[in-house]
Image 1 (spheres, rainbow, N blue to C red):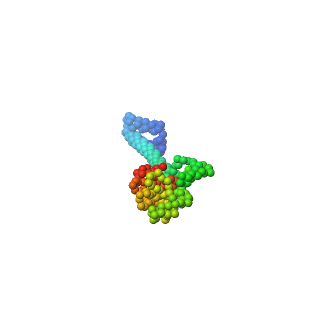
Image 2 (image 1 turned 90 degrees about the horizontal axis):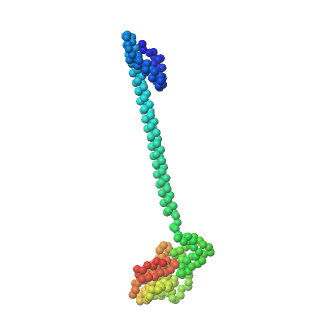
Length: 255
């Protein structure tokens, strides 16, 4: 005789209880596969075999559901881990880029390094050096600028400083100052032109006119002024506001 619906529900409700399931499976197996002697035994055996099959199907379905849940949980963990790794990689990449930008900006904005961190004198030009009241950062002292070159014009102009008819027309004749030179046959002057640019003039005694080159104060501060000329010999002269250096054309005028 088949079990009642209440008993079947009880078996289903305890499906997750392994000892009960094992006992029920064993009982159904005995009823389904045991010896039968009457038609009623045959009916009971058939019912038991059907219930045993249904039980096995339910167990298989539950096992598949558990396996699916485990796979889904593992996939969810992997997705979360991948998402975290991606976020970490993005944040790390952003930090690296920001660090590179900050380093580049710091290098670009950093003041140029001065090999003389502190000085106690200031060059005024025309071989003059003035003491400072205290040691100061070297970068605070003006060097190689048009301001230094202006000191060359502090002395009163003398007849020796004048060029007269040799002077190029664009030079202000009241500003010429003769500079000593070791180049035989040549004379060198510093001067200003009519626009107040700073000029360097060279002349050889055998030529009819002096040769001049000028630079605005800004250009002079950046690179000084250089002039070259050829007579019976050649000459190049360079003025940086501190000194006038001369040499044969092609010679280095570096200090």
